Image 1 (cartoon, rainbow, N blue to C red):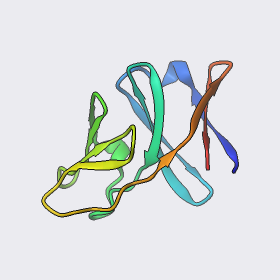
Image 2: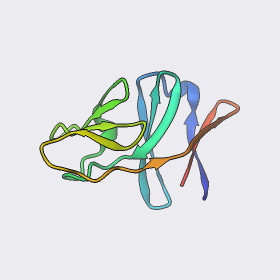
Image 3: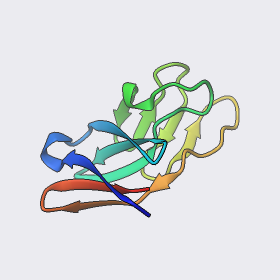
Length: 102
């Protein structure tokens, strides 16, 4: 696995998200309660960029059709249809810099 730099931890405040493209994958990184989590950034219902959605705690709402995702696990919380999980990536913080493994 490759380790990809996301950015400075101080630039991703609590309750905020960012995204990176790495290894051909769109990855969302979220700060939930001071801990960083990474999951897929594309809603598999209709292809929305999830980083444009709203984060409340660990629940991210898709900006297009309201699917709710758990950013700590990549699991679907709510949607009328069953959608596959977004996936989960390991995140590390080293010397104030956030990295994701892809």
